[in-house]
Length: 225
Image (tube, rainbow, N blue to C red):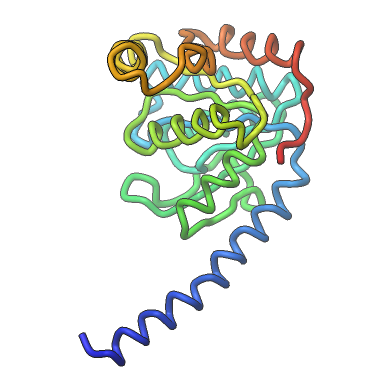
């Protein structure tokens, strides 16, 4: 690679800053008007006949009936379940879409004007967190785990205000939490005992919604900063 080639790459990187800024500006302006929301995470590969899909629908529907908007990644699987449930509950929902091998287009349960398209994962993650008053996480893959630990890290380090984190599916999540407890906490002392109180594990839609309800009986439901 010549010096000229290197300088051209650096120039292109600098121009990318403006596209990143544009994604932030559009996301902030459009999401600021949606009101209190819950972000629902989970696998794009989950099929409609999977029990977790129906649980996702039920959670979103119940939350929508309580006045919450629903934020998903806008794609298929658990994201589709979240937007479908919000539609059934007569509530608002939005899809933060990004092109992935298993998530090419937004699902049919969100209106076109409620879809935000992103090229940058990190911008999308900021919007997921900034405009959510809580997180509901159903089984998923690497991306879902990334979103779980992103939210927990920001709450743990007080970079965002405390808000409820609900892991749905005890069979799926318990082995991971056992490893966190035995290895991260007890063996290596890499987290504090109170960090295990930053989330709850449930099995039903009713328990997930109740956890969020109970949380906001003792915490102010306010915009996130």
